[in-house]
Length: 188
Image (cartoon, rainbow, N blue to C red):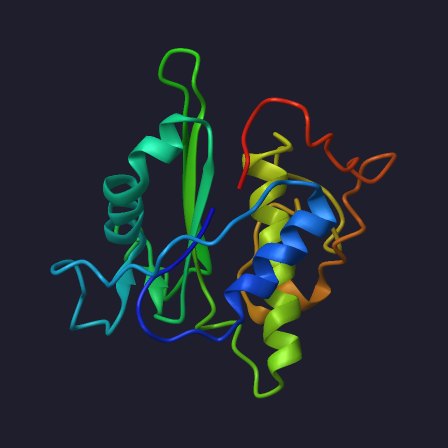
């Protein structure tokens, strides 16, 4: 499930959802836009902490998350980690918990730092970040010591790092297979 947070958008959310479904074989749909939460914005930084937006997604879509649906929020607002205030920004954050037999997954991404004057470059950067999120949340790949072209590289610290990623270069013997839509498990 894709959820736009806030009024601004750098991408066509419906087209992004269709791309995810086509590229990864995951049933994907768009939920209603959510306004920013009433509290949490850090005026001194002019940024949102990721935990405030992750909490918003869990509050509004907790039932879907409990049903093993992956919920990803996207915003044009700048984000940072509240537990790492020394970091100037982040492209996004996610949570993945396993209470009982259900894997709960949700995340939030920002197009703020990846924004480019050419909208196609912004879209491509979002696609690369999506590959990174889905590699972790859906495929269970671990991030680590792989080539910089892999979506599963240990870190993405700049738009240049995003630009270096090749969505087809997972640093595994084969590209992750498209998933069988009849299989049970997380949808997006």
